[in-house]
Image (cartoon, rainbow, N blue to C red; front, side, top):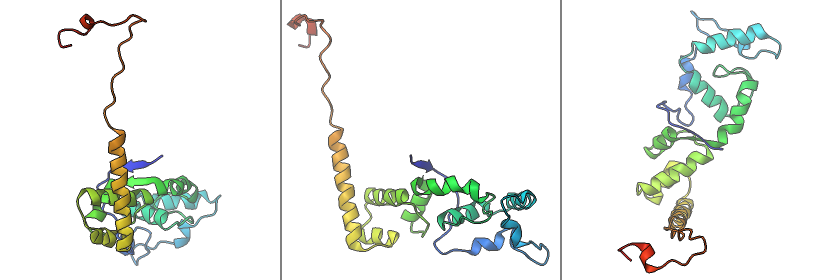
Length: 188
């Protein structure tokens, strides 16, 4: 099952960690935070509650969760979720299809993409008439690979169009009687 979302979120670029400076969990002189709070044991409910409370106030909670999922981070509390709560999201991540990520990539931003989103980028780039060179640059692949992806896309579109050819309507049920010319109206 593919999960499709359209969100106006500003997506984290590849290698961008600047969002961490805005995180509530960053310890400062005026806001001392114990990092161990975010790595509680399974039975340390007070630590879990404290960490989730801090995450609830965090302006970059969604970005933190995305970073944990995209990076395969399975330890500690990230984005307001425990390891157990994130586990189903890790499993579904490969099927995520977020069109805002696709659009951001087609516009030239380097964002993390799932396999489904990469396929959508290829299709969108093809539909927009982007060159193989541009597609190669967007997806960080070779031009030969981009050409192959465009060939596959052309074939898939052609085959889909062939499958959608109009079908003839079946004759009306006549209960075994033979239809005559008068049964078809004046146009026949």
